Length: 270
Image 1: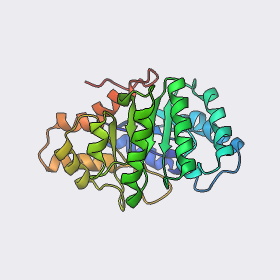
Image 2: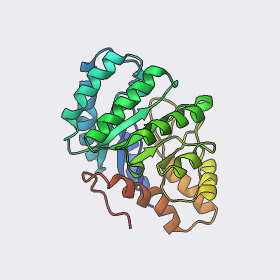
Image 3: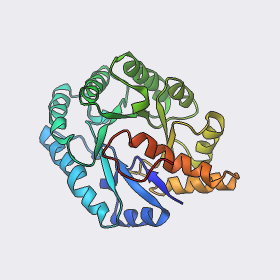
């Protein structure tokens, strides 16, 4: 099979993970900017991190012939400090011209605070100003529905946002239809202990269809599985779905969305 890993935090993974992903059929990996496992104390820390995901990580993946792309932002976990957030956002434009940068992400909300909302709005303004794709993180567990509503309200109220250029990630059964109905793309995240299991993800596709949906592992520092997307493919096969159907969900769909950025050069959507 072939697939795209559209959301993986590879700075937290080993080279063995890259090798395993390639063996499983991964054609490209995309890395949204993320929390470092601790709160960074200065904009200089983010500058170094942006260099890591735009320079070092693509070179590490290239050793396994795996194209590596990234997204840039200050993650919602670190959005409470507005002064720091402004300094970090001021850095981002100088990195947007890098050949592997796809857009702004993963922005969004963590605890649905006023400061997080302000930083979300700042990110959206930045993305629109520079004509960038947007990847959005939705909160966990009991805050997810409220946070998804707040996020979609911010996006829909901005006159420069094109919903077809926005992917709202970590959707679950109670948020996926709202995201799709408003014209956004929906990302289903496959986690061993939280978010969605492969059976739950396939259930959602059976209810909502396969259009404007992708699957991702969001593999990071915690308990996560960089091979969760091919494992979801096995679940679809077990339910009798055709290879064409599976290929659309895990390869053609992410290629179609990501190819809205001219830098993304992996394969074709058909």
